[in-house]
Amino acid sequence: MLTTPRLIVIALCAALNVSLGTVVYLIKLPIYLDSIGTILCALLLAPDRIVGFVCATLAGLISVALIGLLVNPFYPWFALTMVAIAAVSAFLTAGGAPVFRARPMPVVPFAIRVVLYGIVTGIMAAVVSAPVVAYLFGGVTGSGSAFIVALFLKAGQQVLSAALLSGLAADPVDKTLQVLFAALLYRATPVDFIKLVRGQ
Amino acid sequence: MTPNGAIVFGLVVVAGAMLARDAGLAMLAVVCIAFGAVEIQSRTLRALTWSAGIVAPLAAFMAVVWIGIVGRAPDEIAAGVTGSRTAAMAHVLTVSGRLFLVALVVQLVISRFAHLTPLQFIRSIAAPVTVKKLTVLTLSLIDTILQAVDRARTALIAAGVVTPGFSMRNIGHGFILIQTVWLSVITIATGRLKDKWPAENTLARLDHALSSPSVPLGCADLIWIGLAAVASAVAVAVR
Image (cartoon, rainbow over all chains, first blue to last red; front, top):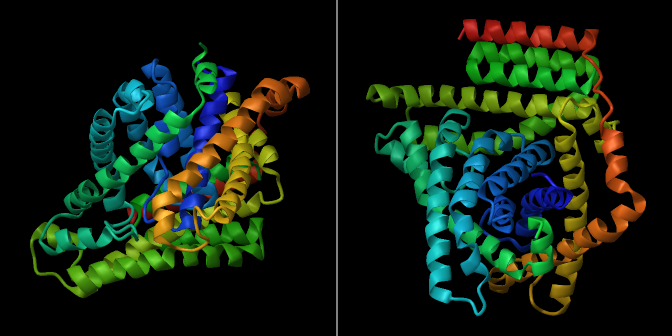
C-alpha cells in the first residue's frame, strides 16, 4: 500500500498543507488553505478509495502534527476534522476525478461537483470540529466566525450548538474553495506523475 | 530526559488541563514552571512569554464575545438564567488558562530539545519507521516548497501577475502562484525519486538512520511524568 512514490505523495501533500499557509500569508488571501493537500492526495490516488483514504489521512495527520509543533499549538485538536476531510475526499470527492481531468473542461459538471463535494466536506468538518471549538476554545477561536457564534449565544443557543451552527455557516464556503483548488491542482498535475503514484 | 518522556509528560499535562478548572489549572502551571526551571532554566521565561503572546489575542477575542456581547457564562445559558458578566469573565479566564497551559507545555517540550536537529529528534521518538520517514520527508519538502514559493512569487511579481502587498489582482491570480509552486515541486520530487535518491541510496540510508531503537524512559522521565500525573489527578479531584 505505501510504496515509495506514495510515501512521496503523502509527504508532498502534507508539506503542501503546511506551506500553503505561507502563500496565504504572502498574498493576503482571506481564506484558509490547510486541507488542500489532504483532498489532493485522495484525488491523486482516486481509483483505490481505501489507499486514497489511508494516504490522505496520513498526509493530514502529519501536517496537523507539524503545524501544531511549528506554528499553532492548538491545531492538533482538529486532527479528527482532518480525518473526516480525508474520508469525504477519498470516498466522495475522488469520484469526481475523471470529470476534474476531462479535456476540454466540462464547466457545468465540474462546477456542480466542486460545490457539492465542498458543501459535504464543509458540513462534515463543521460537525467534527464543533465539540473542539465548544470545549477547548469556549466557542470562540479568534476568527471572524466568532461573531456568528456570539450572535447564536446571544439568542440563547448552547455553546455546542452555536459552534456547530457557526461552523455550518462558514465551513462549506471555505471547503468549496479548497475542493476547487485541489481539483485544479489535480487537473494540472502531469499524467506521468499520476501514473507513477498509482503504480500504473 | 528523553524526547519520549517529554512527550508523555506533555500529553499528561494536556489531559489534566482539559479536565481541570481554576485551582487545578494553577497547580498544573506550577508543575510546568518547575519543569521549565529544571530542564530549560532561563528559557522558561521565553516559553512563558511566547505562550502568553499566542493566547492573549484569543483571550481578548473571548472577552469581547463572552463579557462584551453575550454577558453570561455557558452554564447560565444552559440553565436559562439571566447570568452575569462576572461569571462570563470567570469562564474566559478558565478557557484562557487552559489554552495557556497547552501552549506552554508544547513550548517547554520544544525548548527542551531545541539543541537536537529535527532528524535527531524524530529518530529518538517511539514511532513506526514509516511515520518517522514520512515526517522527515515532509520537513524536507516543506523547505523545498517554501523555496519554490519564493522563486515563483518573485517571478510572478516581475511578470506583473501578482503584487507584493494586498490587491484585487492577488485575489484573482493567487491560484496561479499556488499552481506554479505545485508544478515546480512535483518536478523536483520526480527528479529526486527517479534519479537523485536512487543514485545516492537516500531512502535506504534514511531507513537505516531512523530504524535505531528509541531510548527507554529514564529516571528523570518517570519523575516528571509521575508529578504531572499526580497534579492532573488532584486537579481533576478539586474541580
